[in-house]
Image 1 (cartoon, helix red, strand yellow):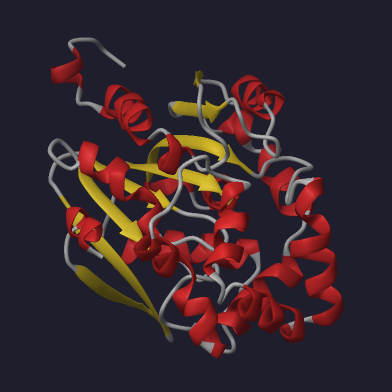
Image 2: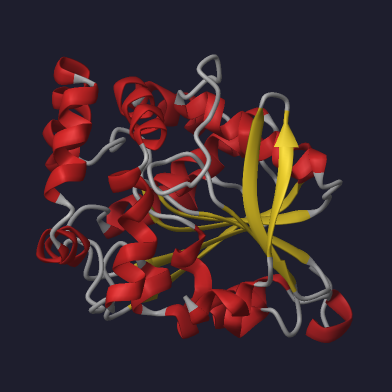
Length: 293
């Protein structure tokens, strides 16, 4: 997929028994991008294209259903465990003062990271994402929570079989993005889920452990996170409503909120230019901004 070249060459880092693939491009202040369920680093391609001239952009593929390398059978695949993977990933690369950016399920993971492993995070950016009682939003609870708990691998295998049809992939993505994906992007999102039983096993394990208790516990620690927070929220999203954005802004001590029109949940797909501009203004060095932060 030619668009992935803007994110640099693919690399790997070992975290204990597991390997995480990632891409890195650019130099300057470090930004780490965290995707959500059934997505991969490809979600951020256009945002990175708008930022890599001024920032060091690092985009891991996390084990949320679109990754290429299955995790070990003993790996903690709960939301807390995935948050630990993100923290260990930053540690393994020696990253500090990171701007952590999350979308969708990745936003929930970022909330757990700053609650439990805040030491390497200097700033937080959240776009439309799971938060508080909405992990998952009620519209997805049956599809991605209750049924996977009941049927386990059989259900995820069925989901992967259905997603062999590009029409099914488009229908699913249409719920979270207005943008019409080309075939290469559809394949980048779903090929590993369809073709790799280990990936489906990882996804099953994650879905079975999703619970709002993780996001509610993380939210209790928001008042103690005194670093800058930026919330960029698409207004055309039927799952993550603006009231969640306002609640997040109220709960963090130093938070600013920016609404963007013309976007559903996948703001990096629908409004990548606007998102990149907001992030650049938020992260740019003090000398460039001309003000003290």
